[in-house]
Length: 119
Image (cartoon, rainbow, N blue to C red; front, side, top):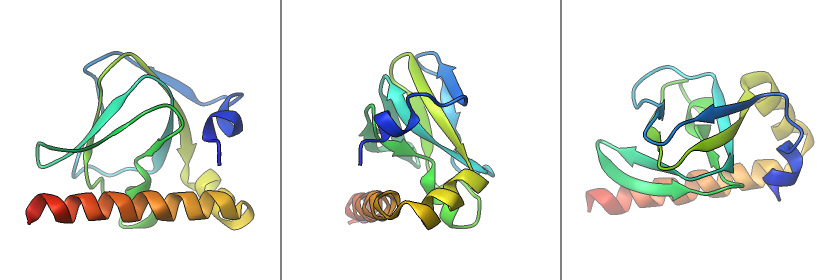
């Protein structure tokens, strides 16, 4: 699924300068993002877990669990992100099976990376 195509005309584009903390581990969150331009890093307890490039999602864990952020997301470069709120997320899950599978794959990959960090 090409999320860049899906969200290219989004009204909810947000710009972040390089170095900005986009999501803070442990805080509450009710939205996620699609990276449209730039690169972000995803860290857990100050250890790099992954990077996300254009077309990738961040902040998805809070959407499917307790609304608490499980990691910190920081802009590595100037970035443009498309924001997805809870209602839009749930609608996408119900009506776009490819999106649901994509989110599940991202969650599984990030969970595996987190397990690998603690071994």
